Image 1 (cartoon, helix red, strand yellow):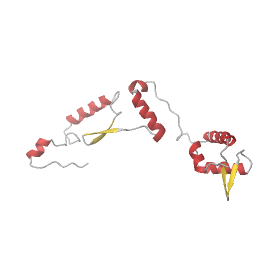
Image 2: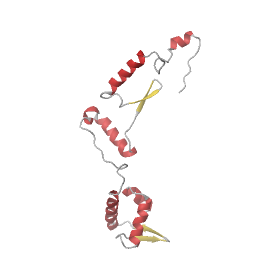
Image 3: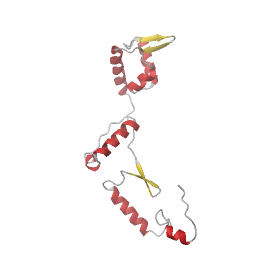
Image 4: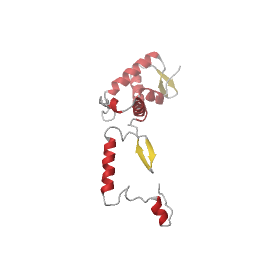
Length: 163
């Protein structure tokens, strides 16, 4: 008879392998209506339609005990759809479902990685304010501390970049 490996059930129902072992123990003690397949000294859950229904119920029952800090449902504000394009929204949703985090795809700009979503809505204004502050400061910063190619060549040295 066909059966599931514990790892397959854990991945299919988004539970830990220990939870699958607990389900098997429940079935052995008669507290769960799972049909088991015995292979040597190991027991596996049979691949049947009845077991599929019971496994769905067991997985749903276990979800109410999950730590909400790790499994939180969120929804975007209505303005979210005004800020991002359909392609960007799809990119964000895909990365959330695959990686579990908001994507930070970046582009390489002047030896610095810049997030492609930083400059939407108020981000561009924040960037302009920051650049104006850097230009007005008398101390060395990432903009004022760089040398131009002309000034480096006039000193007879070639520029070296540490990336």
